[in-house]
Length: 147
Image (cartoon, rainbow, N blue to C red):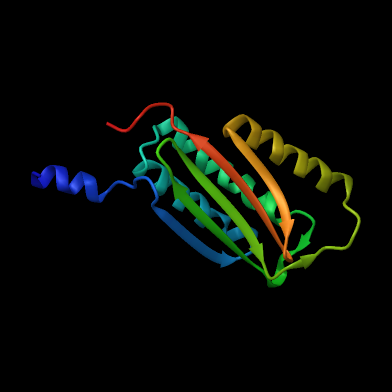
């Protein structure tokens, strides 16, 4: 393999590659998840439009994981998994308790807006509560194959 091709191969992510990011569940740190999503999607062969969609979607995914919780003491763990045709991203809120309060109309509207944005940007998404944590996930398929 030529040096030029070796450099390209080293800069790409392929089937089965996984990247994990963990940070305190603070709204001002969600930008980290967006930056990592941009870098990973570029290395996984997504075009610039898809990259931008994923960057925005990851921010909304973090908001979905945080909804209805008291995240002051929790961490967000985001796992990016590259498959042949898509990128799967799971965002888990760990170590935070359910909020326990009633959602305000503004919170309900914000949650609904996050779901509408995700529906427009990705192929599939969801949110589940299990084992004392909340997980929001998405899947985005590549339009074309990597060359």
